[in-house]
Image 1 (cartoon, rainbow, N blue to C red):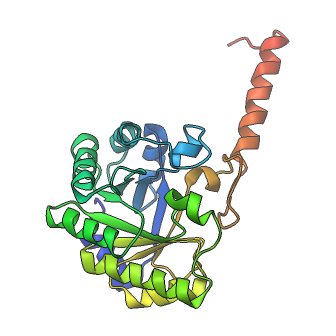
Image 2 (image 1 turned 120 degrees about the vertical axis):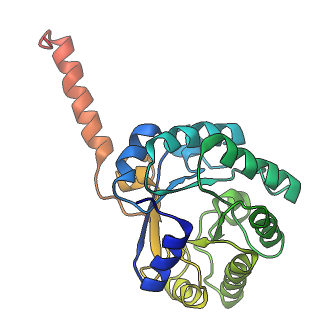
Length: 257
């Protein structure tokens, strides 16, 4: 049975934690689809798939390209695609056009954008009013790296109140869920208790309604893994060993298949 908006909301009410991971191609998407509740085509693919140093360079066309591939591998999970930098901040009209293209051309179920009140809440309200489901994202927002860096957000009372207000405004605007990234666990717990929609944490403690990781970080594929990510495997090392064994057999004339 496919995961839907109503089943995500039911998970919040039933206190059933949601499992969320990222994908950037068909093969990985098919593996995740058997296990997770939400597959996210995150703009983190700018780094893990395209080799950029931040999420900023990835384009709308590139996100659509990868989301289309992921969509072909997902049959059951709820599928969300990030709106990349400058595909929604300029105006609500631009946001509608970008989000509409993603849904129309990829087959994903929803889009995600970063930021809260006032501009992004207004954007979310406009998108949801025409039938485009939106996931919000507050706390550390990677598209604001040039202003915020990658430091933990919400450590001061002023910052914490701003992030809480942003999350509340996104729910009021119609967002179906909100990502809480790299904020103190007690702040994430407060936001989770005050919202009626699911919170998805990444580096935000255990009290969120679900957890998300960049799959490349989980698998130990990333060159640099954030301090708030948890690798479960060193796949980079295993791949290096396997390729090394293959290369040695070929060079020594022992590969005979």
